[in-house]
Image 1: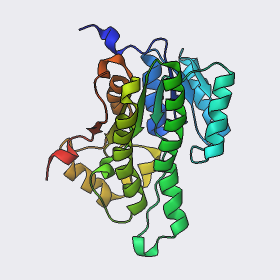
Image 2: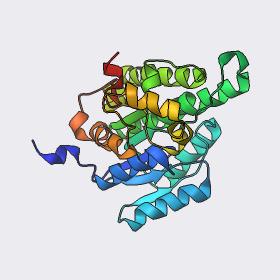
Image 3: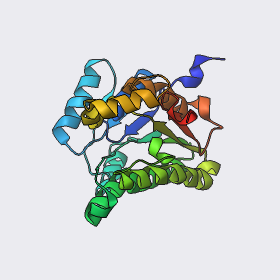
Length: 256
């Protein structure tokens, strides 16, 4: 088997929420596999700095700051890419937020904010990307970032759990409607990863002990450990893989 199957040379990848954390690691990995990168975040300065850092490593990266949950902003971003002649071949819907509160105390505005950022954004951006992939007739790759919470639940994270469960079936809906156009839509479900978003949990001895005790590998995952799955799903190696979710969780979902 040729490693060319995993090459992303000549392709352009838009990774949302990629100014830091999991999105940055995934974008960097796609760039190292040959893709031209478009980084996204809501903070323009941070997103530009992330693009500059990757460019300094010899990768090709540009910044595109916009709110992924704002349908007008999403459309404007794609129209800007159209005007600049940039065609998105690979879309990674990674942008997400967390908000912890018991459901009985949860404000509906916080529910909507989490669901819009984690789930609705993937629909909005996926739709714009797919329209253009279909019009070009060249197909493409969509990789949605799910979670362990695409399968199971924990207290205090109901909107996140609902959104990530939705990501699993949104991915399958994308496959059902777009596979005939040569678009492969799949997802990655990270386990507990050592990121800024989880820093408070990592520093909580009780929760840290829970993660290490519940995960067969006895440790938190590292952002770079998502890169292999992301490159696979973004490359020709996965051309007959569609509507699936790959869990990168250290084996947590495999055991009781």
